[in-house]
Image 1 (cartoon, rainbow, N blue to C red):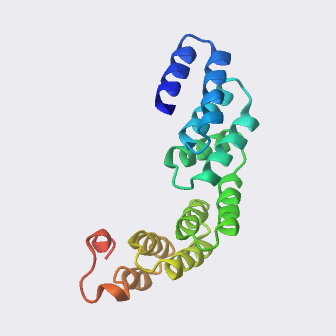
Image 2 (image 1 turned 180 degrees about the horizontal axis):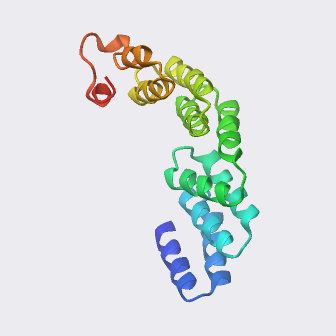
Length: 178
């Protein structure tokens, strides 16, 4: 029912009635607080109403609930740039690693944010942590190879493309890096 409420809210937004749009989406959040898309929609409405910090706070709340919310991360990056808060994404992802120290995805997100800030050594450390938690996740190896190559550490980058559990066969996901 969240999708229907978002459609109704969007219709209000298109008519220029942002207050009605916001009221509708806030109503659905009360009935279904787990659907992070509703928080993202609310955050976007807040942003349009020039309530930028409230929008960021709402979006961060959604990302803490569901770190895999890709639209939310992209919006947070865009909004942080517009607000000139260059550390925001890294701070939020670091907090995720503190709240979820055994969640490899939190470490992947943190590493990605560090890499975006050209903090390659710290990104590699975060990726090592992700690999320690989930040694079968090929995305961590892929990101680590990329970060090492960015740092000019090509031999290490190539070595990472063949994780121990894969034997001699380089996984398809990593062959482009090899």
